[in-house]
Length: 478
Image (tube, rainbow, N blue to C red):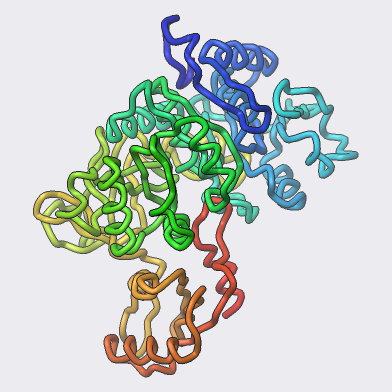
């Protein structure tokens, strides 16, 4: 069965805890529910299933059952605005839709669908398209669709096959040395590739996952963490910055053994701080790098290399290879900066922007041009230095906006956007006097007039549902 262990020896082991229903799930129960729902979804043709999911057992069952039943499932944010759900439905014309009973008003009166039917868990319901016969076919290998844009309604999906998902889950398990004793908690949404990878890697490792939509910035999240003896936490840069501000170093977390960080660059100062805190607790910080286009993870920096390779995201995960494209040539030579190119069994089939695209096969040849800029050192460790599209050209100079952001993140939460006329810095700290000092320092370093820097204080940095900085929202404020 997809992602779930074979044999009977683990069937009585707990694998999930649903904080919404306060129910523990064994592998045996999960398999039974997946098998039952897969049967309910049986169809003479391959279906496209929209799963508007939350971090709950019902969503997990729907995800696994859809793929186990031979269909294609798109994992979407249940909290998306009704107009976003409607737009994606109109574009992709799903055969089946899962959502929570309280949030299906957007489907009211839609004559194309029949429902709702009870889906079995967490008050979930499903709707079936009344007539799917004239819809374009779906490629036999296509199993999963993930969006890279959170809840914005951008119709661009990443197309993934079962091999992509399974290989990445096993590679992550190997990188982190996961075992049956691991207990994770959902600190990220499962419709986000990083959050989904935590679930997948623990399922294939016979581990245990606490499902919750609670925020890691709130006390109840950590109460739940302690109650279940969780051993790991996965976070994106802003979560670590805010955890540091609310006093993570003083939290009593006796069972915590591993913290992983991905989803963007975390300033070295924070990496060093959390590494030191965790080392004193006989725990570890593992820096990882990935993209949705690679299912989730691409590289991993073991905790034992943290001090020696501070700033690196590590080496390629098992089964993968990293090269750098410099002037159209791929190389592994050290200290050659260029676009990071990854190859491996977890690289997507390709993109989709319409229902018709779901019939397409593999278009990447398992090679991903990441759009990130970086280099390999003498030992093959990858350092990410920026993003091709995060560049401003001022006074003839190419300014890496990620480098500017790192400069400010030493002082507190900040986000940087820009164009070829100015660079705007949104800060969650400081005042006009501090901003003026920053502008003078940067102007001197970059040799540009200080007037090109515009500062704005914000109560909070806008984030996407996956916890990344929402640069599109910030650009609107420029």
